[in-house]
Image 1 (cartoon, one colour):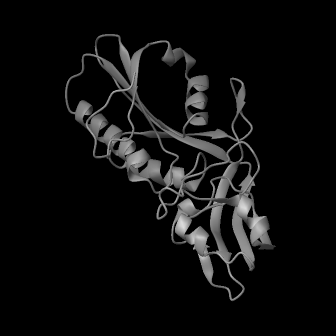
Image 2 (tube, one colour; image 1 turned 45 degrees about the vertical axis):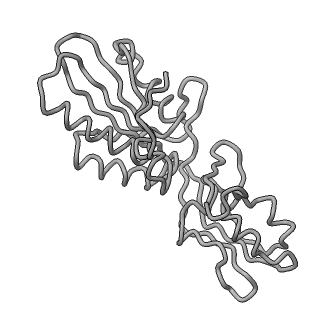
Length: 235
């Protein structure tokens, strides 16, 4: 998943099998307040390989290995040229970081610090990112459960992070289950559920639902529900 693309749509379709979410599409280039919906990003493959063709960093092993929204790359380069595009977490040497470059054209790889340390500083590497940035659309989903009080509350979560269970697949799952629980009982208040890519998705929804937003009495962003800590509420 990223802020646009088929990964987001697949996620929303799966969640739509469990709750009455409506998927909505908004075209690239659409002005939403003072933001613009970006081109859609498609990623097919990416790797860093040594001179023998061995993949040392491989998107097929983890889609966190590629900086989200990386432009296409197909080059051979020295370690010194490659190093500025590599991201690690030295204090967590076996973890792959998560990096994005949504609004600035760039490219990069995320790898464990152990992988980084194992790279030959004198070698030449094949660096490939098979991606595409082209006009498409931004996808989001919503659903409304009607109550009788005339007050409406917003439940939202974001759907753009790849391969991370706590931040934020857990939020999507909890929001979906909350919808099902509320849909099974009579409601005093109304509840609006929105699942959207972070920042640009929320702005896009607000820009296209200004009238509905005026009815909102309060809201909750559901996120990071899968960790080991106690339940938390951040105002």
